[in-house]
Image 1 (cartoon, rainbow, N blue to C red):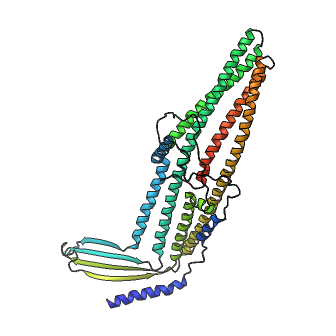
Image 2: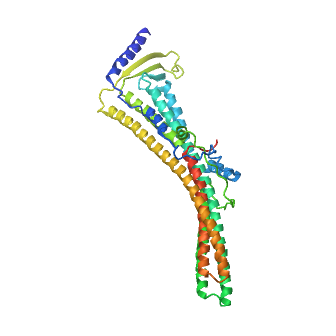
Image 3: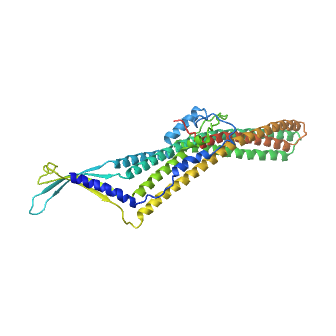
Length: 453
């Protein structure tokens, strides 16, 4: 027994000596570099209107919308695929953690040869790779980081899906408001036709005016039909997000809901909340651990095997009643494999660099999205003020032209033109309101303020 222990100690000592012959390479600390990048971001120069909402869920106070969001989170097939991938990574992690422990195998065999008695062999073998260089632990850490990456990816998918449901629902409100405006335009045009017919019968207007009015009526009818079809398609799109197979219409409010402005907070803390950025960071960590594993493949490894074996002429006697045991320690070191191990280590190291650049790209995208959304918030507010003032002036002009037309001082074409401009401005203002509210959903997602769990 003492001789075997001495042999194991010699193997460990030899492995330590051989480790000097293998280089693990000079590798950059990409994780530390990635951690410093968000601190370089600033939104102070364009963030003039601080918000109050601290999550995507808090943007719109609507029980109906909250119910639709939850239905999508429970039933959307794309999100369920992401969840299943997360569960796969959790199972992979449990599997890799098992490599920390020895493997125990039991065996039983029987042999029968001519002119000899039957022989039965029972065995019990314990195998274990000594994790001298923490290579196995690095592999487990890589799987843990991959699991964290999957978790962050799943959270990003949940937030994105919830944002899509909110935008789709808000878009239905906008489309039905646009339809209401077009229908009011159509009612006005039909009243104009009746008025022109009455004036024609009295000899005050000609048929040319009636043809012009009817042309606008048919054009508006086409717009109404287009909006009706668009609404039906948008309802089907929302049903798909919810995982519904039916084609039920939605009852949405006639007025826009109140959509809060998200709280921006400190930029480095804000962007750190983005799950896609977290996933990119975990990808660097996983690649870094995998690179460490690849470099340690160049180092020697120690395997220990202990076995119990018993041979007998009957099955019962072969069940380790009087076994013979042996202990084997084995030191192996790679000497020549045509440069495959060095190439594998270089590939793994380059993969870490690739993941770092992916992180930088994700961060740049995040910064662009936040800055664009903040800039649009201000631009939409200013444009709304301008269009609202223009609509006020246009409404006054419409009143004047209606009076002038009744007095015979303006033609029907002039009145129709002013009416169309009025409805166009009203439609434009409504679209700006929708775009600003929808942009707040985009801004919230860009800031990493996801749904409340």
